[in-house]
Image 1 (spheres, one colour):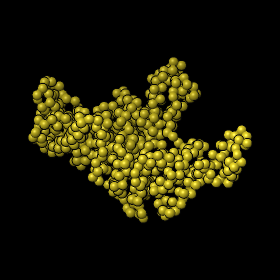
Image 2: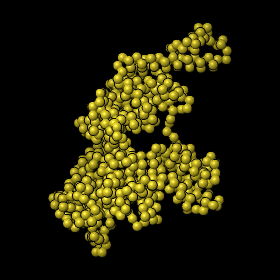
Image 3: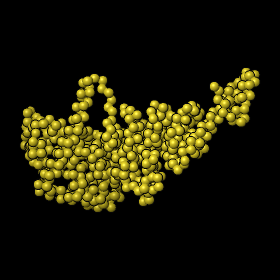
Image 4: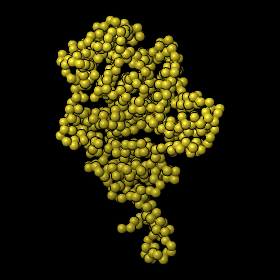
Amino acid sequence: MIPESFKQDLLNRVDVVEVVSRYVRLKKGGANFQGLCPFHNEKSPSFTVSPAKQFYHCFGCGAHGNAIGFLMSYGGLGYVEAVKDLAASVGMQVPEAQPRSMDEARRETERREQETSLVAVMESAMEFYRGELKKAPRAIEYLKGRGLTGEIAARFRIGFAPDDWQGLRSAFPDYEHKSLVEAGLVIANEGKRYDRFRDRIMFPILNARGAVIGFGGRVLGDGEPPPGEGKGSPGPKYLNSPETPLFEKGREVYGLVQARDAMRASGRVLVVEGYMDVVALAQFGINYAVATLGTATTPMQVHKLFRQTDEVVFCFDGDAAGRRAAWRALENSLEQLQDGKQVRFMFLPPEHDPDSFVREHGTERFEAQVADAVPLSSFALRELSGRVDMGTPEGRTRFLQDAKPLVNRIGAPILGVMIRKRVAELAGMEQAELEQRLGLGPMVRKPEPLARAPRRGADPYARLLERVLAAPVMLVEVREAELAAPANPSAESRALFALLRAAGELEGELSLATAIELLRDAEHDFALQPVLKVVHDLQRWEPAELAAEVRDLIAQIQTHEAREDARRTLSGLESPGELGDEERERLTRALARGKSVKSN
């Protein structure tokens, strides 16, 4: 856990304008900076960055946040990665969790030093492989034969591992060093050491920051077996780095860094199976493709892609093996689904992969195939119903049993309800009966404003949240008022009281950037979307005006609380005689005139 006080200090030091301008061209416009939104495709700027409030907001798509949130949403970094990246940029050291023992402290120090060392090793290896490609006519001819230009090869930093058992020795004079084995570049076997990658086109695998963490190597010719395995046993067509302290196959995808801008412009990412498919598609101007790393798509990979874009399209061969792989991808996507985001499936003719299809049919035809990809719901129901005879009770029963584990894992509430309804229709049942018979639990929903809550524009808690965010210094005064939460809370009132609780543990003055950080979760994000639009306009107000508004809203809420207290007290009496004359008169006045009469 990173202490809230550290995050507060960090956000007070960094400049969100500087962070955003690394990726977005910004122009000064009044008190703020403006530019084209990096999160959706637009021609006129609706993206605003406020240096005074240290937050960004898009009036087109609603994207908003502070410097940490921007690096997560645009840069694809995890939360801790984003905090560490910002901290490094301003010379701060992220406090580590206190070790339980000296041994644990020593191991943690060694782990960090090892990761730093291995990154440098991988970068050196990549430069070695890139240099070797220039000296390998056979490898160059192979890439030219696949239609690749030098520009694309440079963009993806493609290299070549020479056909040499210890080719890396020229790049690493200390070839016996353990770091080469730890990085997965060298294999140590029965006292012998040799390069893992030989006579292969080398594709560097980058993390979200653009650092090399692994390699994928495509064999040239038949390959050559490791010592002791005998001749005539060619290596695999593709060979990946093994699991290392830097590299975990199930968490990474190939080509993400290169595809990031095109993914945001197109609103989608295309997931293919091979490195050459990604590179070949880029050669034809289809730049939003990434590849899994030789294994079935994992939930973590889907989660990572959904942080970058709203639509994930899986591309597979149309044969039986391709459909089996598509089904595995579907199963691993279910719990990552969100309403407003979608997964679709694209199937190519059995004789084609993406590389060959785009070469034969061209970019326009390939893009049309992507646009016609099948939605996850259609693919799932078509596959399930196609396995049985839906014309018989036995077939429909089997269909329901097969559908049950899938529909119960869908993470998107609205989509989940709609799929359950369609499953019930196909089975000839009512949805309620389907859920009862199969023991399906209720769909998990994100908290939303209650139906009975006042509309946002008239809700004093929403207005108070807007003004407190515009003038965080007033949060102390709101906290001291000790307001009670409403009986039917709106999303904004929940966010307000969550902020009051969290800010009570901080020292010093609260900023808007820190407030956004304190409210970082799905429930409060829902409330912040409309609120931040108003906060942007409130920046033009004088501080005295905002302070007066906050105090007036506090008084309104206290008056309402007093009325409710009086109403509950009077309605709970069996007879007016239970109260003395003075108390009864006080409560009656509260109801009649709405004065603040909170009891001491």
